[in-house]
Amino acid sequence: MTITAIVSALHEELAAVLDLMPDEQQQTVGGRAFWRGHLHGHDVVAVLSGIGKVAAATTAAALIERFGVQRIVFTGVAGGLAPGVNVGDVVVARHFLQHDMDASPLFPRHEVPGYGRSRFDADAGLSARLALASEQVLRELPARLGAGVMQAFKLEAPRCHQGLLISGDRFVSSTAESLTLREALPEALAVEMEGAAFAQVCHDYGVPLAVVRTISDRADDAAHVDFPRFLREVASRYSAAVIETLLRET
Ligand code: ADE
Image (cartoon, rainbow, N blue to C red; front, side, top):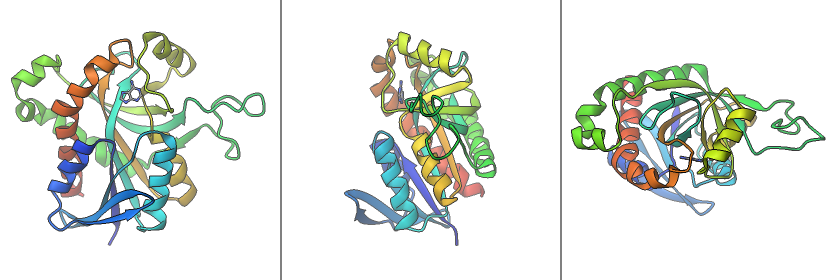
């Protein structure tokens, strides 16, 4: 049977996923706790990614080499960049890029040396199913969260976007930096700190990857203000629902 890795960026998300696994057992590899078990009849390994590209790459390599996972689904949060990618929306990645990769003038800016490319792809089939699961959860979101939380974050009609997700070892929390990223990479929908590292490792091993990110902030001067409360009250509840919907229906 296919072994699926469920990777969460946040403790609360992982806890919500573990609550859905009746028989999980913990194993420590590389200083990380991996949880093996079952979820809706699927063989699953659940783990926290750690923050940043190095932690993400180590986690991805351990999942593949030590646990033999055959597909990886990542859930977390991201800062919205493109106009219309608002707090409470969801981005399912189609492609990934490391916005802080720059080996110029030896290689074009953003190109990963040795690969001849700056972009890595998500698995199209798995991502399409993840987008369907996300859209279904978004439709049920007001009922799940309640009117108080919807109003507190001005969540009116959250949308699911699909496209370019960019990653770097920086929490983007100034309007100036966000504008610089948007000018350099106008196609980028959102920014986070792990997805492109997972994508490079998954490319190396030929393992399908899909990433879903709830938009927790607009990567601007207010990003740090919105962040902790959003994680607690929206994002952590939301990702477990997406994972459950995905595994129930595939
Ligand atoms: N994850 C969530 N918000 C982010 C931001 N503004 N920058 C980087 N990673 C993030």
